[in-house]
Image (cartoon, rainbow, N blue to C red; front, side):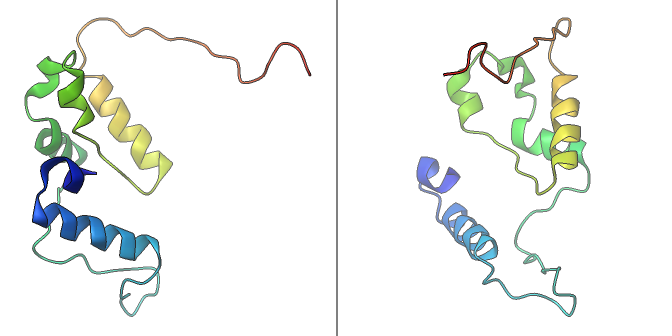
Length: 109
């Protein structure tokens, strides 16, 4: 997505690598469940570092939807996604509001 938005050739290389990994065609290490990430790809050491790298101090720009649409953090595990989401949500100003939804219709057709 970033490659399309910015026409950044490095982003295109990264996007291609992600597709190769997703298609199961990326070389694995001796452990078949492990890959080696190339050294030219920046790696965050913590979720706080990752959030700062992606959003910077832009947490004050939360109403700028175009700016937000250009940013995303992807993770392989739901547990990791939940932790990162929680870390980001704690940075939002104001009180937390919980909305309850229903996952089924009231009438069957």
